[in-house]
Length: 481
Ligand code: NDP
Image (cartoon, rainbow, N blue to C red; front, side, top):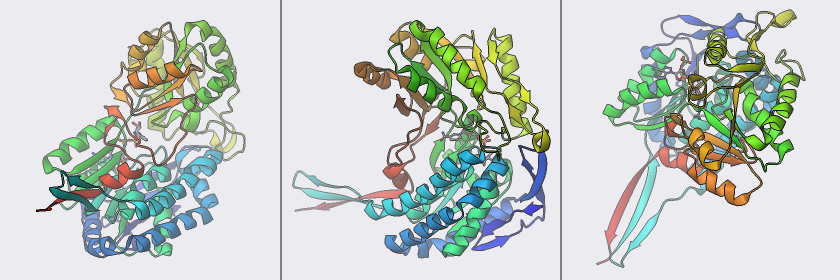
């Protein structure tokens, strides 16, 4: 049985308590490994190591820091098959997805910030010929990075890379639900020669390890990705301590399809936006609004495609939909299907557990569900389900659909399909979301600001936004007189 270890002060170590949690393989529904059930004592050790490493790491030249992070990226690429397999087994996602998206993106994250830091600059302002203001941006200290289970190594590195590139040291906690690739990543960091204590990874439960990181007085900044409820509790703890906070939270994203769209592209992208990673991506478009003129036509084509998606063993080529991440999560998603029925929805396909033959017979598989007949403001259309479930609704006017789209507490991303350029601009500007895709979905450029409005988060990640978050700005004003 695989036994994961913490990575503290450059060493792989057991949790001080000696206690472990069970790690499930969601495709088989069985325990296949053990995870350290760490506590605040392990976090304390990690913070001590990170504090000790900070003066050396932050004083290294950016070129030296960049070199180590590039080495980490190279080793991720070297081990990409191993990492992709580990991610698929740990999370339930199709191996093909882990190979094509998760792991390549993890090395891109490292490479992107390892090189971005070489070009990072700060402002200077000439003030009426009376003074020169210049701004310095220096690393803050020990950063706390907490990440979720849906894109494990992808989101873990998305935080760690800018934090380290900017010269901070890090105490990180991956989700205890999917810790395996973070563990393999710690071995890669050792091999790459990352100095001891620069990155520390403490495995364990959110309320124990995560909370201890958030509460720690020697961690002045927290970067968190996860659910809105957890984000709220983290903000409540961190705000009175005046910590810097970056929160990337949940979403309930609208996918708005106008009558003048390119229907083939719209159906293709809508399938991806709805069901990639079993619908467990914060950016998935779970509310599909279709203009009435093409509603029937779209629904027919969309349904044909959804029914053709293969729910299957994640390790088999050709499986489109793997397992959802846990029994608890499967139960939550299925409860929303029941709620949809109570709220007057019609389940046109899917929405039940799928029993696969062979090794996956006890796995957590759900057939992708398409629901119609729900009001835009019912619970199923307002709350985040985070599974392979979409609700399709008709609309008539632009004004009406903007109201529907903006009606939830969330504001992470939105997708618009139209061939009318003016409309694309007009609607994009009126949507209350941090990201808008037009005629595409999840087409990412790592330089762009990433994050949500309203209850989808606080702050932005990506490119210079991330490097600014992970540095402290100081303005120095020099009189010219
Ligand atoms: P959670 O909020 O449950 O957990 C996220 C992380 O926080 C985990 O590592 C978790 O540990 C930890 N945690 C839990 N409680 C605490 C606490 N009190 N203090 C500190 N840390 C804590 O989210 P999920 O893992 O369930 O991920 C799914 C959610 O993430 C969805 O809502 C999704 O929308 C959101 N998400 C947002 C993204 C964005 O960029 N906006 C991207 C991807 C996902 P543990 O696992 O042990 O509970």
